[in-house]
Amino acid sequence: MHRILMSVVLCVACTVLAAVSLAAPADADVPFVKMYTEEGMFLIALFPDLAPHHSANFTYLAETGFFDETAFHRIIPGFVIQGGDPNSKDRDPRNDGQGGPSLADVLTEDEQQQLAAAGEILEAKGYAGLSLDTRANLKAEFSVTTKHLRGTMSMARARSHDSAGSQFFVCVDATPQLDRQYTVFGHVVTGMEAVDRIVSAPTDPSKGQDYPAQPVRVVRCELLTGVAHLSADEQIAYREMIEFLKAEGSSW
Image (cartoon, rainbow, N blue to C red):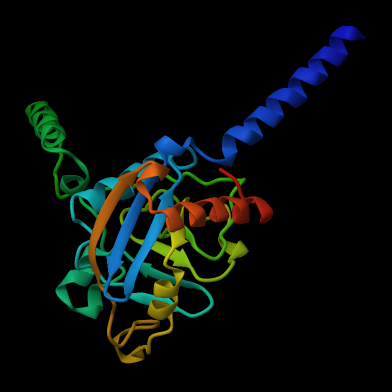
């Protein structure tokens, strides 16, 4: 009986520790991205413990300037703003929503050389070679602990669950129908007023459903690591974001 009770206690303790570990990463390790747009900046806290590959992908693309000059090509009041499509850089709305990163966009120079070497080996064996132009698709990292709430950052995808690339969306309201269907990888800390301005802009249906008449563009992204690198007001906002997620039953 004593062993059974001890097992129960240990299980409860492990559950509590797991819940605590999901609450938030250590302050020094939290990755942030400041996304500067034509309507203002919004600060994003990323969740690498929840979606490590999506967080790393977003961080790398932001750091290399991939998002610069991309537009928020889809705006739906009460739902989301969507951006991150490299096709939107050409100012032609007809191909927006269809683009994503290639392997060349997501691999370092050394990794590209390794891929080229692997391609040569395959071709020598009679197999089709690998191409840096190949679309880079992320495997889904769905969570049962997080919710799509106002300010949630999540990845857009095609029909396949494992088809996310660079297109992301910010929820302007709670959207529970998206839970466990799209990969949550972060949350807006400050700057939701900029998101609200983007989503409330006039649309031009002649250019496509939910397409803004004058798309707002990303100017640049800035990466920060650690809460200490935020301003005093941003640090307060980050703590408030953590409490908001807890109150809504959303954790990572």
